[in-house]
Image 1 (cartoon, rainbow, N blue to C red):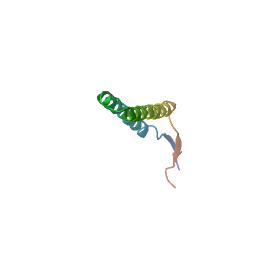
Image 2 (cartoon, rainbow, N blue to C red):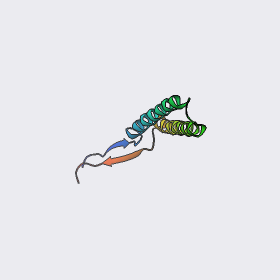
Image 3 (tube, one colour):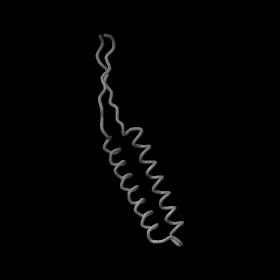
Image 4 (cartoon, rainbow, N blue to C red):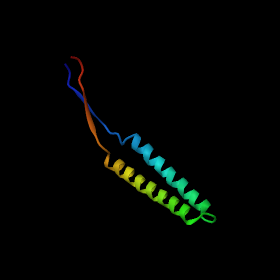
Length: 82
């Protein structure tokens, strides 16, 4: 039997980048919608869009912070032979 191989899997590696980019895109679309509606929207619509932008920005910051810390890590050990 040979020595075990160890490598680390991080769920923030692929999915975290996608989530951060998705939230960045949603935040951008929210800002665009607010810019388009700012003239003829009522205050409730403006507050709803602003709240959505704020929530998306906070979620993006959380996702980015997890990416910078490396996310949760799991160590998987693979043994050759039996």
